[in-house]
Image (cartoon, rainbow, N blue to C red):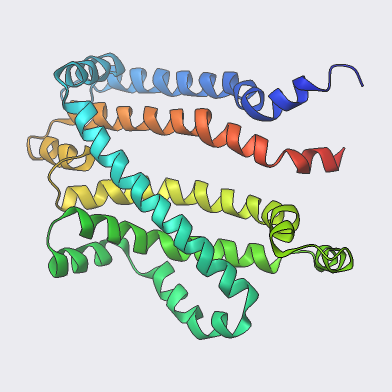
Length: 267
């Protein structure tokens, strides 16, 4: 059909993400409107307006504090995310392929999924001290069980017909991985990445509040000591903007390109 070549390729990546943007922008504007109305109804230092928060954000940005704190928090989050995804994917594949390993260590995964993040952070801070390694390790340990569980279920859902087809055509291990296993596993990897990132952002901030030498969570704890709600909301807004940028500029376009084959198959 005409108009379905390059347009389809573009629409599956950047185009898909940007087409969904107008409604979500309207939703954000509605949220800002509700915020402004509430700030007008309840004026005072404890309920600043969006404009006051924006001015505070700009002040911290021009002073250089905001970028430095964001850099520390994001570096911790991405290091922990990368380690957790690599380890979790490898362990999840092993558990999905081996019933013995899964049954042997399933209780470990259950404990990891239900153990409060704050407990892991406090224990590691006591054992290792208030340092970078303890913080990143605590985040990895909190994220790892979720990745393992998601990837394990993805491996279990593999269609056996594809394996039979690969054996019939005598495909090598690497061709099976590239043509059969990876395409089936990618939706689960993306699900683990998205849910994991949403957790890691929050966990890193909580751990920074408990103890760190900088970062968004550390700065929010300082604002809390002075009851500076405007500063807290300014840093929170900056962090939300970074999360939105990562979602629309990285995750959604990447997801559209990786899962293009599913849309083609459904036509």
